[in-house]
Image (tube, rainbow over the protein chains, first blue to last red):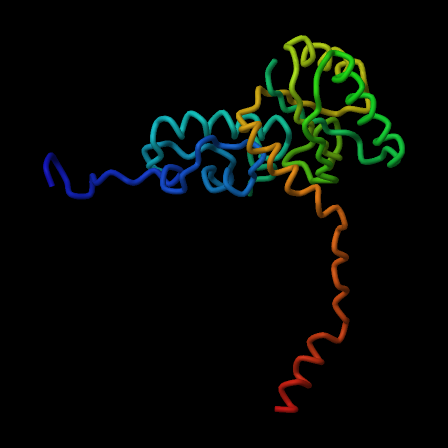
Length: 78
Length: 134
């Protein structure tokens, strides 16, 4: 591959693949896939999401947090 | 006119009648503001991801409605003074209204909820019995 290392292959956006037009804050199962155990949103660089979907995702996660569907942080972290 | 979604969380300690009453109140408020309710969904009791006002679970209700921007603000005023409502969230909906209405219309003709067949308790045993017959 061109430029640098071979491992720099672009990951496909999983939300594009799933043909999701708008990320829904009510869809807990979907959102859970894009947060770490601790509750943090997984960065685009890691998840491979496209810019558009990442923007929708962060917004959806934040809305879900407000409704206590998703955690802000893990409650008890041992 | 805009399409809005409002989700409220009420206390699970409330009696069912009182919860219903609260929902009615909100629906009235939407209608009085000139809005049109598309759908009201009861999500039932859900566990919180974190404690809210010292509680670990809440009763979720979701409203989808069309109306002028004055409605969400009037709802907000009502929610703020209402202690029975633990939390609320109003967003401009991205749902395709036409598709949603079609979906609701498609759901309507079959209002009879098919009673979930009660699994006999010795189901596992009966399955084994079947195998034995073989």
